[in-house]
Amino acid sequence: MNFRLILCLWIMLSCTSIIHAAQPVWILNAINNIRRASIAAKNANKIGKLATLGKCANALPDDEINRLAKITTKSDGLKELNKILGKANYIGKYGDEAGHVILQDTYLRIAIKNGHLSSKTASDVLTHLGGTPGLTSLLSKINSSNLSMAKGHLRELEIALSARKRGYTIISLGQKFADGLKKGDTDLDVFIRGKKINFAIESKAYSGLVPDAMIKADAESLAVFCKEVKNTIPVFCFEKPPSRLSQYFLSQKGVKCIFGTPDEIIAKLDVINSIK
Image (cartoon, rainbow, N blue to C red; front, top):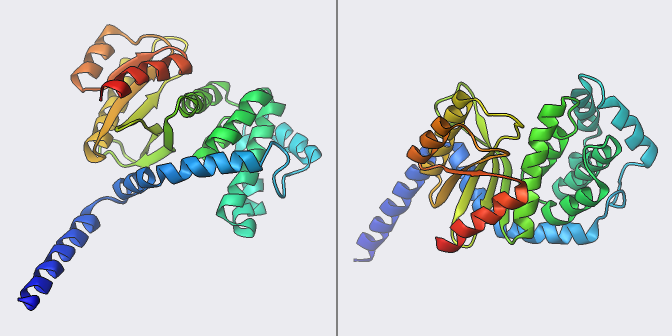
């Protein structure tokens, strides 16, 4: 009897291992980030209390921030900046958490210097989002000399910040995944956790009309993500309403279409969050 029980347990564990092994790495990463979400939120609060802009351990001096800020104004400046910071190897020297704090502090202070962020918003980011997976990479991108690109990433940051202030847990920013539709990996702009459900958010910061073809491609990617990562609602956010064709396509795909400011977008998600 005991032998049969042990055999059954072994078979169950083996099947479970096979199932997990068969899952793509990006799905396992997404699930792992969801599990870590509550811990990440606690770490964000802890980091925010321990570090203020320019005051974290081993923070770069102001004259170095000024030098780096000038570099990012060049056409290839962000690439050069990331190369400089990569060589400094802060994560290797000080560990994952402390290294990311140094990098986040650096990117935020550069963004302030170049007028991409206000001091208040930068402080709020460090306080409320510190420790979030993908934050360092996103902060790097808002320092792009390409203003339209910087604007797009800044909007993602503002959506995440607004969500965090309204009680959502930020699971990850720029979550990589393979949708099987595009040639390479794509990414999910903002991934958040509400009361009982997750929201996978694609954001567009176009002041004009977003091309229908672009919306269609990204909506199909969202649908794949939410099919594989259970209990997740796909959301497409815009500054202004997309075309009627795109709105119809999104509704057919089951993707929520929301437009407005970052605060207005999260307020509308609150309604969905309260129903589910």
